[in-house]
Length: 324
Image (tube, rainbow, N blue to C red; front, side, top):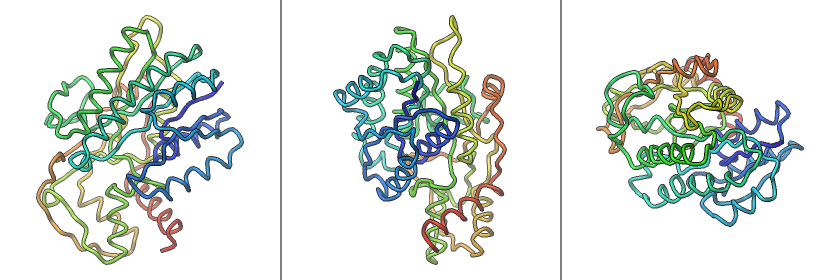
């Protein structure tokens, strides 16, 4: 019995793998260690995972058909899959759209096809994103809302993953659940995310870029709450006879003003930020806010970490890791 985690050296993949290992699971971690951001950070996460006896690492590109087919052939005892590997980042999708199509769309199909070979598969959970809501204005965002107006190619690829999953669930009765993550932050986070960028620039005495002149709100969700939601979902596959492909929001159910986020970060750092107010970035949205009623009902999902608690924890990790 084992769980396959794709993107295991990534931010959410690392924490999810640790949590699975801590509860006694055998974890097969997959990652290609690409250079979208600092590879040494990914390698440090991976080193922590490799220190665990029950962790097996497979370096592979999820869009590589032969690699993924061979991988599941070597591990026929896989019963659960947490598919987190993706090309992330809304803004980078304006620069290199092809990598998003290859990794997020083609890679998702390759993973699904590989998983069709797993005779013991009980549940495949995959990462979607709040970006699928795009230009929607009704708040909070509900999984019952239409998502036909993406604001970015990244969001469009995540919506494509959901549509493809629905087809596979229908055609092959695969138990699939997509989780729409909302602005995840915390220790070991991604360097292209706000908490990381702001912290680095504040400590360096550089101005921080604040878009839409600061009139932004985000449903910031702490990594421990995200992981709790992922594991609770993994443990509850769709019931027989129910829809085989589902989608849920995983957020904090709080739309925090960006300027308050910065204020809490300043307090944790003990240093004021120099703010550079800028227009809205292409592909960005003004506000995100997750309706998590279904996730509470079906998985008992109950996020507990506010930014007042989560940001100081991130800052403490950042100072220790970078020795600043």
